[in-house]
Length: 342
Image 1 (spheres, rainbow, N blue to C red):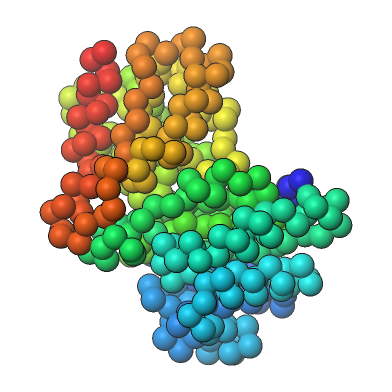
Image 2 (spheres, helix red, strand yellow; image 1 turned 90 degrees about the vertical axis):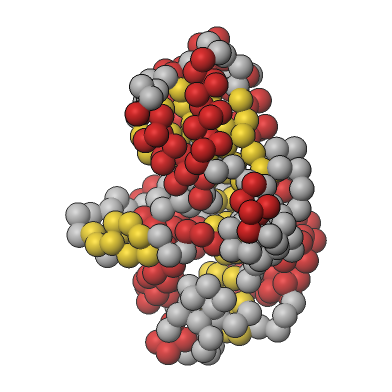
C-alpha cells in the first residue's frame, strides 16, 4: 500500500532561472523546504559544521542550528531507524548516507520496516522519510565506495527510488520526495554534484514516476538515468554527426517507472538501447527490457532490445581500470551504431 502525493502540491517551475550546481540545487531544496515546514530536518555523518562529505548540506547548520541539521554517529542502521521513527511520529526526516554503498547496513530497517509499515497497518501509518546517498564510480574511491546499488531497492514494494540526472531535477525531485508520504530513496551520482544547469529559484516539485525526454530522435531510443544520461546526450551528438538520430529518455524515477514514456518512445523509433552504470545482472535495464517485451510496443521493434551496463566486477581503484568497468560515451556510440545497423 503506497500513498500518493496530491497533484495540488506539485508546482510547475516558473521562468526565473539561473545556473547552479547539482549540489547547490539539493541544498536549496533542503533550505526552502526547511523554511516552509518545521517538521523537515536533516541528519547524517559530518553534515553539520563540516558541511557533508560532498558539500551538499554546506552552511545549513548556521541557519537552522544543530537541532535540525544533526550530526550522527557512524551507524547507518541507526540513521535509518531514526528516520523511520521520526517519520511515523509526524516529522519529515531527510537522512544522508555518506556513500550509497553503506546503505547495506540499513537494509533491515528499510526493507522490512519502512517499506511495509503502511501496508501492515492498513494505511493508518505513513512513513514520509527521505534517504539521500551519493553513488557511482569515477572518483577513484575503489570497490567499497563506488557501487551502483539502486536496483536492489526497486525490487521492494513500498519504496520509491529516484535517480536525478540534472540540477533542475535534483531540486524538484528532492522537494517531491520530502512531501511524499512514502519512504523515498534518492541516488545522487558523485560525478554530478559539480555539474551546472538552469534551476528556478522558486519552490517546485517534479512528479515522481515521470520520465523526461531529453532529446527527440527517430532512429533509436537510448534509455538511461543519473550520470549515464549525460553520457547518452553526448553520445547522441556524436551519433548525429554520423546521421543517426537518437532519442534520449531519462527515467528519473526507477520505482515507479514511467511505462508510457518508455513504450511511446519504443514504438516511435523501433530500436531500444538501455544504458546504466550498474552491472547488467539484475539491473534496471532488465526490468525495462521485460516491460517493453510484454507490451504492445514490442510489435513495433525492428531489432532486439540491447543493454549496455557495467562489467560484472567490483569497481577497481586504478583509474584506467575504473573507466573500463562502466560504459563511456564511446561505448554508447558503438552500441547505438551497431543497433541501428541490425
